[in-house]
Length: 116
Image (cartoon, rainbow, N blue to C red):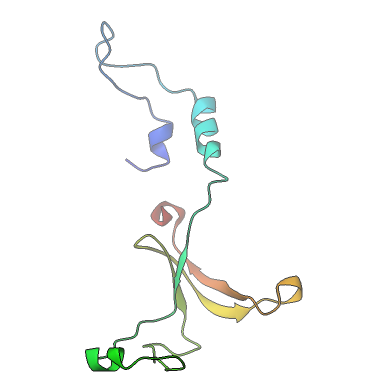
């Protein structure tokens, strides 16, 4: 069952005398339940690349060491919630009040049902 449908379809359960069916959840209750989560923060992890040093090179790492990644600066980055890929984008620098802060401009976004 799709996660959006789970809150609006009739709920079933074993209750005495009702044959195992309960009343459907009113749509206003389902909508309120969905909105209750609207402000919950979600952590999105941005993957810019992977490094695969040998153990010897790993043991030699020190301050100012440079660890090459498997991607180029202009390659897209991937956005994950948990282990689920939700979007791709490109890194850029914010302007204005947030000047100097990194940001991601989205270039591809997964279908809403595939995001969570």
